[in-house]
Every structure is written in structure tokens, then in C-alpha cells.
Image (cartoon, rainbow over all chains, first blue to last red; front, side, top):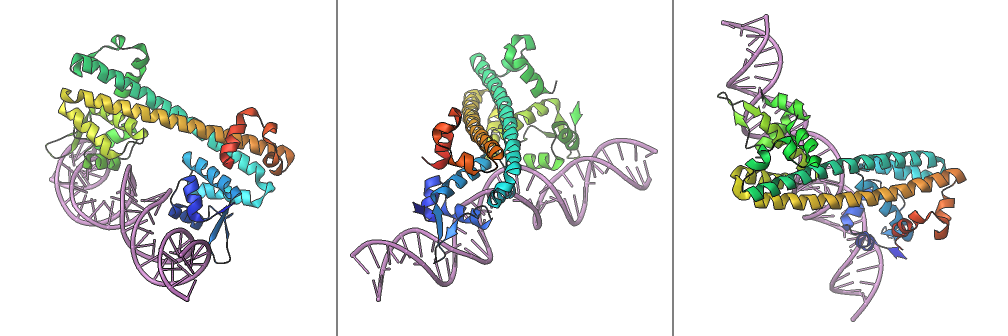
Length: 148
Length: 148
DNA sequence: TCTTGACTTAAAGTTAACTTTAAGTTTTAG
DNA sequence: CTAAAACTTAAAGTTAACTTTAAGTCAAGA
């Protein structure tokens, strides 16, 4: 099965212009052309696009994704470098998850804060509470928010 | 304790120009001015900045953060809306964490892929494996990557 | 063959969140 | 009182990742 840029764009859920842009930026060296100059995407290219999508989700900039793709085009000599790059990105995602969990904790605190304010009719109640009055899991979070 | 824009910027770890920009965009209506027109940040403002930082980490656009801050400036009448907004954002962060975990799974698969390729000396080995030959936890991931 | 829709490129436009610059004012240390 | 550092605003510049536009070409169906 082969696809035009529009068909592949639909298949992976982006605009055709996005794929053309990726191509222009050198992210799609594996895409071939018909005699008339039309891009011809193969089944295997879908997998490349999924990998690019994955790396993009980690926040990796184009420049680095391009480097990765170029290494892959070199063949088996670059296996070590590619493994290294993927490991680094995996660590990076680990950090991102940890940070989002911190953010989640802060939002949970704010939920509790406004739920308490709602019951009391005023934010003065949760705001004025002593540390010992708040649920144990929120004490450290409030200290951080207040810079204590 | 009070702070100038430069001092507060240092305290929260951003450039002074960033705080001025936030102020211009209406994110800091709580910041007061000296008789000479200089911004005067109070201790309580630090907490506001931390909340803004938290919302920014969730990917919330300025426009929405501004709405939240404006509601807070209205006082206790807006407690319900603020609770609602924070809850929605908490759900959003839940989705983001789930997505990052998916991304992490894909990267773990790619790590296994390149480790296997490294041992074999060629990516042809992990690429050519049948589903039953790969570790159970990677089978679904490879199917997704290949669009199966 | 002709029409129509999808393709092509190059270049300009968009958006968000800053950052820098320029020209001028306020505050602080000596 | 003065020099220097840090402040002020407005406006222009930056960056990444697209998106749109314009002008033209290719491919499939009637």
C-alpha cells in the first residue's frame, strides 16, 4: 500500500502542509517521489512518522529529531549513538513525568483550598489556617507556595 | 519584605523582562507601584507568581491564566468558578501524565530495539522478529507503531 | 480531451511567549 | 550632589512549528 501526502497526513492525523514542512526541514529523507515529482509514502514510512511523533511528544526539537533520522539513514554503524539518544530522551521523559506529578500535587492542594473556601464561603478560612489544620499531604506544598 | 522587579525575578528564577511582560499582559494586577512608578512586589505576590508558574506548567495559555487571576481579584463570589477551573486543569494534567507514560512505553520499546540491534550488530534482527519473539510488554507497542 | 481535485514549490504570514533595544526616570551609595 | 545601577515604557526582534497564499503541475474519471 502506498499513500500520497494527503492520505498519509489523514492516516497519522496532521495537515498535509505539516508533512511537507517536515520534508522541507529534512525530517523525511526516506520519502520517495514519483516520476512526476509527487511524494510516495510507503507502509514503512508510517512507522518513521510514528517515531517522529513520539520524539516530538517528548519536546525534542526538530534539529535533534533530524539528527536521529539522519543517523538511522546511515545504517547499522550508528546503532550505539541511536541507543544513547533514545536513553537520554527516556530519562528526560522521566523528569517530565515527575514534574507533572508535582504540578498535580499543587493542583490537588488548590482544589482542597477552594473546596474549603466554598464550604466556608470565603478563601480567608483556608488561607488563614495553621499548618496543623490542613491535611498532612498539603503541608509541604503550601510551604513551597509561600516560599517558607 | 518587599522586592523590586529584579529581586523578585531572581527569587522565582525568571528574567525581569518576563515579569514586566506578564504585568503588561495583565497577569499581575496585584502588583503595586511606588510613588515614582516602580513596581513593588510583596511577600503575598510570590505566592501568586508560584500559582501562575504552576498553571503555566500545565500548558494553560496566558489568556486563561489571566481569567483565573481576574476572578481571584473579584473576591469570594468567584470561588465556585475558580474551583471548577482548577479541577478541569487537574484533569488535563492527568491526561498529560497518561500521554507521557505512553510515550515512555514507546521509548522503552525503542531502547529494547536498539539494545537487541546492538547485540546482533544489525537492526535487521529486532526488526525482523515475529511478535512472539519480543518481550510481551512490547508487542502492543510495536503493533501500534506499525499501524497494525 | 477536459475538468477537477490533489499535488508541487517558494515565500510570506501566524502565534505564543518571551527578549532586546532605545530613550528616559528613579533610587541608592559615596 | 553626583554617578551608577536598576528601574520605566513602547516598540521592534526572536524562535519554533506550523499555516496560508500564489502560481503552477500532475493524475484520474467522464
